[in-house]
Image 1 (tube, helix red, strand yellow):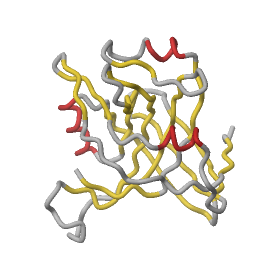
Image 2 (image 1 turned 45 degrees about the horizontal axis):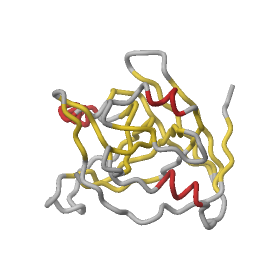
Image 3 (image 1 turned 135 degrees about the vertical axis):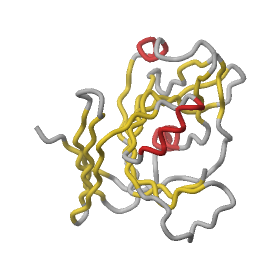
Image 4 (image 1 turned 90 degrees about the vertical axis):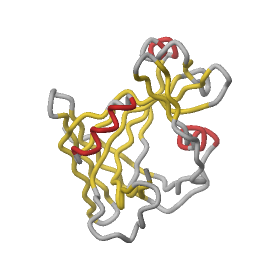
Length: 186
């Protein structure tokens, strides 16, 4: 699948590695940075979603919001990757990715911009899980080593039919890194 990822935001929290390890299949181990496991909330907009070989300029390609809750892992052979704890999507046909074990859930998601502020909101159809996130973007900065470590994973793992599956590792280069301030609305 090919898509453009727009308005992507990464928000991360450190956890004790053993608290995250219990959420992973036995073939994967938590990848630690500064002795912590990291869990990220990543809301964004997917645009021009299509299968390989279909021109991105084709009219009518979908644009929709998606949010993933992820952690960072290593396979036994030390290949790094992402383990998705949950993926919420506002485009029901993406639920077909459940066939390969991707933890997609239908959600009600929105992304809006007001000047330099991006606002994200999401809720899962089948539960009370929800979030509201507001991010004020600044000028681009040189990312720290930790920011590169957290945002430069191009391989993901899923589990289906009793087997661990790996998506092809591709490189997008570094994400642009603006300094951001985020806050939660109460």
